[in-house]
Image (tube, rainbow, N blue to C red; front, side, top):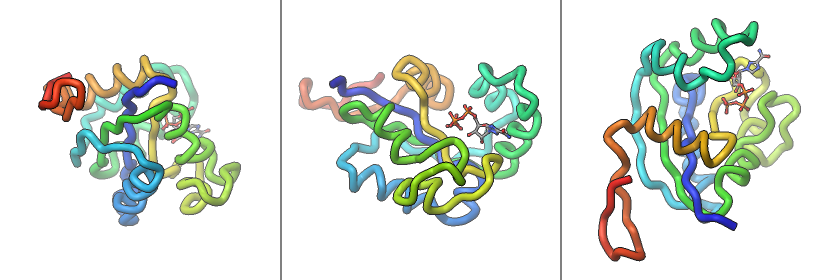
Length: 150
Ligand code: RTP
């Protein structure tokens, strides 16, 4: 089981509804470690790059509009198997299909307002971290007993 990083983002509806603390709490309760956090109002270009794999989907324009509606809170988290387990904490893409106990299952109804994002593979996680944190993430490195930048 690999210790890996993932990119978790509270979407504009999650920020507006005051769910940032709740979402952080669920990852902390699980035992994962927060490495970086920022609130930004993303540009259309940044969002189009983030969702580049979905460009041809019919819902793409609506998705960009939804994600542009307000600030987002983007985070880098680290821990064992966090990409897969993090998505389990978020729930299914469609909140109505998400089990109670998951973030989307507990707080959401619409697929177009599903509160949060989590990277879907370790490679995509690193791609998204570079995209949203272009200056790198300064993080505690226990093997170095010091701060390192990745
Ligand atoms: P995310 O990337 O945001 O974590 O979501 P995901 O992997 O669970 O789902 P994905 O298929 O990558 O879709 C990205 C986001 O697009 C919106 N969506 N709308 N109207 C629709 O049918 C539809 N399908 C997807 C959702 O906001 C989804 O999270």
